[in-house]
Image (cartoon, rainbow, N blue to C red):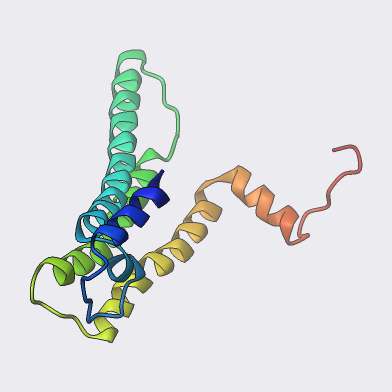
Length: 152
């Protein structure tokens, strides 16, 4: 459905000339679809952050009520989710600013904003390795640091 809507937006605005060559979404679709695309990406990441905050708050209330101490590392996941949401929103902000205003960013600014989420994915992988035992086991098996038993 999204591809059909993108096609429709490019068909309806086929005569629009775009001078920027930074983004295929902006260059090949209508303004309204490009705006929806970039806003939707940001909203999804902030919704993920919000769900972690809700889970953390519920976990905190349950711990206070029961007196139990369980370690879930939700604070780490909240920090990861917040930083991811922020860094993913920067390219969307840059692209929407270029789309709707006269402000034009150079290639270096655009490439830096797009490289931040990639850098963050490396950091997130390291944090997952440190704080998530199942992830550590799977990576260890993947790189053959741990013997895989024949029975499993």
